[in-house]
Each structure stands twice: as C-alpha cells, then as structure tokens.
Length: 237
Image 1: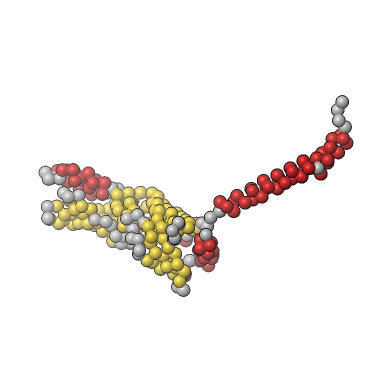
Image 2: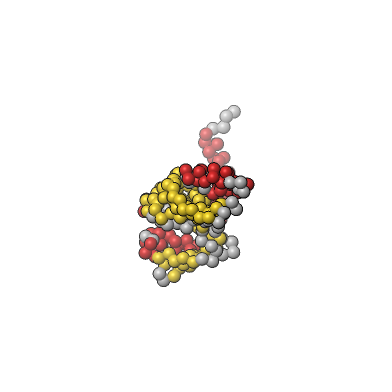
C-alpha cells in the first residue's frame, strides 16, 4: 500500500526534528564551514599591476648591450637611434620565503634600430652600421625584490634577477659577418656563437643589491593604495 502524502510529510518532519535530523544539520553546517574556510586558507597576498598608460612607442632609448667575444671575432654593439613599441605588459608580486617579494613580469614589444657595430678581428677594428628589427615578441623575467616605503615613494632593492634578458633580432649584417667569420682560417668553431649572438641581443639586467627609487608621483592614487595594501598584507604573513 502506498504511503499517503500526509504520512510521508509527517515522517520527514520527525526525521528533521529528531536525532538523525540534528546529525544531518550538524554535518551540513560543518561542510559549509569547511567550504567557506578553504578560500581563506588558500588565499595569499598577491599584487598584479598593469600600467596601460605606459604602452606606446619610445624613441632612442640607448640600451646597454652585452659585448660579444667568440675568440675569432669580437663585437661591441651600440644603438643610439631606435624605436621600441610596447604593446602590453604585466607585473605580479608575491611574498617570498625568507623575505622580499617574488617578481614575475612580461612585456610584449617590437623594435627597429640602427645598430652600430665595432668589429675586432686579429687586433684590427672596423666600424659598421646595420638596420635591425626585433619582431613582435614577449619578454619574460622572474626574480625577487625588496620593496620599502619611503617618504618620496618606494625603495626597490634587487634580490634576484637573471644576468641578461635576450631579445631576438633580424640582421642582414649579422648574416654577412657569420659568412666572414667562416671564411677566416683561424675561426674554427668560434663562428657558431657569433651566429647566435647576431640573432639575439643580450641586454644586462640589474644586479642583486642594486637599488632604485620609485617616486610616488609615478603611480596613480589607486595604484599606490593597491601597493600599500599588498605590502601590509605581506608583512602580516
């Protein structure tokens, strides 16, 4: 015989009000509390900054370029005339064990430049020029930094950084110099690193211990509040 709807409802009320119902409610409350606690346990201070106003074109940056020495040939590279277009970028800070903050950053860019090349072969020096292009690419850096608020803004101390960042370039002069190197009787295997060096410009990064000031005026009020809030949270960890 089927149970009437009235009896079934009464049975459910007895379960909800009896010991079994109390156990179910207690279990449900514990599960809800655990779910609510999970984000708080997993959450950690993290700051992500995107400065869209800095995207754009920059002229004549005069970057420092790491010299090239293959044994057979030596190169000193310089670029006084260049145009760099920054399309997008992002910077993320997270607390670092042992102090400071982990930094991960990337920038998407392309560039054109007049490259001045000082070529050293067998003690002789020759100066050359070339127009090079850095096709659109994404450069990424991972390191660590200390950030200390000061009255004028923030003092940044480099804790960890890669020694160089590599920028891929396209150079007709580079191809010609590789062919020249390969034609030299004493060149040997020294031309292989030259080939790589003339397709990838190596830009030096700040060294651990170097310090930089970030003026408060460079940041918008909302960005300063974000950074200050993050630093307070990181200190509380």
